[in-house]
Length: 236
Image (tube, rainbow, N blue to C red; front, side, top):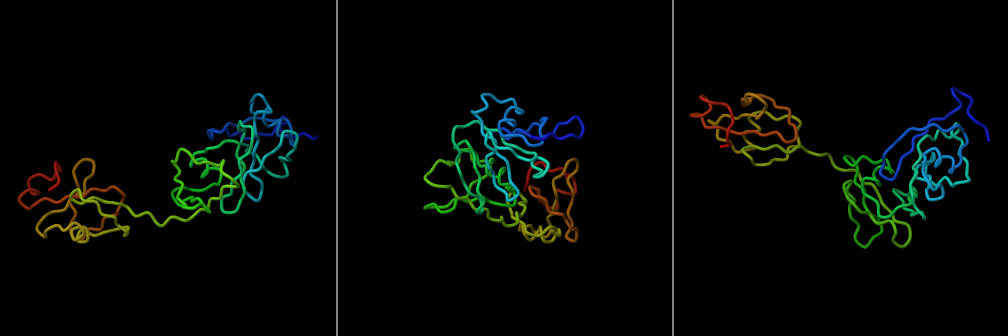
């Protein structure tokens, strides 16, 4: 078994536990076994933990206690070291994963499959009633009969929600004019429109273009009011 001769003769690997906490550590072998990885992670007993890694074709695969991995050729540097006594198998988009714990969180499924929950939704597949698995779901069972299957689906664009006089409106345009905001909120023509912001609220004229951000709050005041006090105390 050869060792890496560069630097101090050590390789840096990243150990990830069942809570997805990461820690870098040094290992003195460029061809470590699964048992060596558990020792480097300082986990005991050694045979009470599984070592998993992501091969070139994706997914998660077990590195058995006596099996070696060539760190230099594969470029693998990240290993999950997780306690358990059996492996549960599941697939995401047809790629196979192994994991020693069931149930798992939705966050873990998104993490190991390298999916961005803001852009992609994970769904069960092949069940009587397929459902979306959210990233904040606490418990997803992997111990059912056979291999659990999941599929990812792209989410549609997320449109911001703004409030006009405390009424919510979903907006698809990145910018709206004051006239468009006024029409959206059904504001009378002689009322003035304001955007809430730190300090003095911003008057919005009909021809002013406003960049739309999620959660923005607009309000209107009658002409007898806004000339005296533009500080927003309550929406009209």
